[in-house]
Length: 468
Image (cartoon, rainbow, N blue to C red; front, top):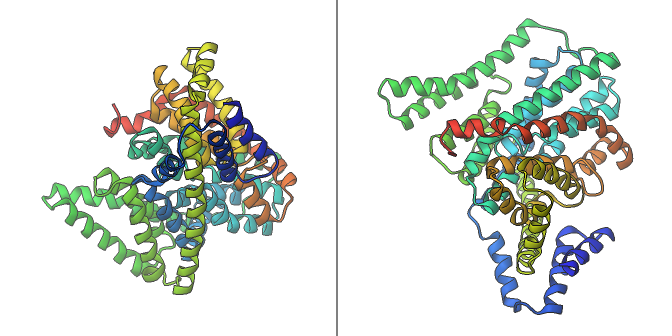
């Protein structure tokens, strides 16, 4: 265990990439102890990525890239400005609302930070906000991406923990709302203390227009329900409602109705059993192509090819980490390291609340050093069995795990959101880190609520019959 984990940590400290560090540490362990032939390692690598849920990874990444190049992010931003831009600290509130909407399309914090975050930071700087404030609120709001459905970390966790990905998606909605409210309250406090004003004039017409778009989107499931009560089949009801919505949007050219429909289609499709969470990723890509090529006509074949190559590059790096982490996690189990860690934790406490406190501390540290996908793949086989023995629901545990690792994305030395925003805002990593620190307060408050009030996480999937 010391060789395996020690070699991994040493390589990480000297700057070797995470996946290569895990491969080299695993190779050294196998070379010295010879516990398995090489072919077994190859089989473990293939088994790590040979999973139906993992098909969602490239499609959700592609959907986020397509939304960016289709100009959907700009429309979401304009909609958010109309909805909350008139508030004190208006563009900071816009930042949060925009991230909530975009999170229903991409499922990743990085896509959020690099996509709509780029627009938001520039707009806040142009309106006189300190660049540190722009970076801080963008970083905090980017963590919403993997909490609201869809979510790539939930896909990886569900695969590793053998938990319903649909239940995880539904479980993220209420915690995501709690996080959003806490961030908006934080912005209001900053606006009061620093004298931030509104960034657009209050115009009842713009507010009503934005509110009307929300009402139109919410009317979609209502219309489907009414049609089914009238005896129309469910599939035909959805087709009629969707056709009416597209025709209405085409005629009046709303700024964001079709973009707002993305999470409705994904969540509604999974709820009604039309497609699995994995197939929902394909639906997101198809909808993105419809918006870019047909509705808004902002996508060209050149930009489509660019988005595809970016998706291939990102997917390759993610799956490379998954294969390395699969071998590493398997060796942790074979070497009894997982059992030793489990026994050590249970020797400290058998109280589930104390265990969750220790898990939060451990994951916050791990999140600073490990990529999210690698961290999930490594820690789930170690910590989940203990959580189950202590009576902790695996869906609740998955939310705690994911939020901790999202907070880790904001920290050096390996916080990817930190580096993305540092590059976007042209700030040093040190200044970016300092800018983010105040915005960790609402995230830690949300973490405490989610940890110690499981009903926030479990109520919705329980009501929908996804968990018992």
